[in-house]
Length: 296
Image 1 (spheres, rainbow, N blue to C red):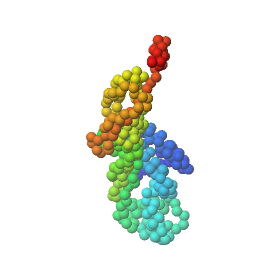
Image 2: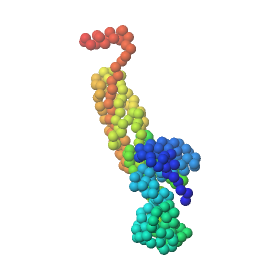
Image 3: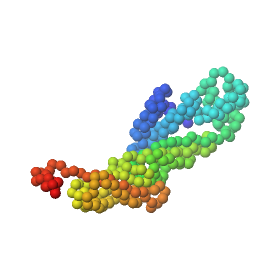
Image 4: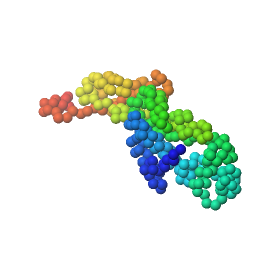
């Protein structure tokens, strides 16, 4: 397998800080996201490498192993255990010593012998190891999260079609079993963990399964009553405004909020706050009418 330098993938130096890694990942993930690069295999491959690099370098323990063992970092624990047990003795079939200075040759020879390389060695390729888990973010609009829908992801060069249930929460994580890194010597593949990021909506604010919004009404409607129409995530709703409605009045529309996750047909509530708009640019006659009204 071709060795991929995770630092180069993110455009970073080896001494990059955690903040540098986070910033580089977010910038590149947005640029090469499959949704923005449809049918671009190179972009999809790059996106996969970016996720792999972030998975390793954003985890201090994994990064330390990667810095020390390079491409063989996933098997660092096995190397250390074998090294300690052999106690400077030569590995029976690999023909190399653990004593003295350790270098990349030692690691490569050990892993080749231990995990089914040409050297054979003790274990004879029998040791099986589970692949690495991957982590990724999936960005959705509030409208996307409002309805159950299917979405295609590209992972390890393969397209995976998943169903996203309505009502998924911001920060919620789901696991796709077996869609992580490949296992070693026939070991099981790792899993893919997807974190949902729900973007803010310009009109509605979500809190759990409830939605909140502000509706502007003119002074005349507030005083005399009437109707206003509101565009919701599920369509238009007519609101009846009572006479003498005060600024800041709140009403609740039961069952017009956000769908409850994996509970089809259940919804939260929609809370509306009325904001009364004071008229401007009045004519002299209109102002006089207000003066007369104020004296009555």
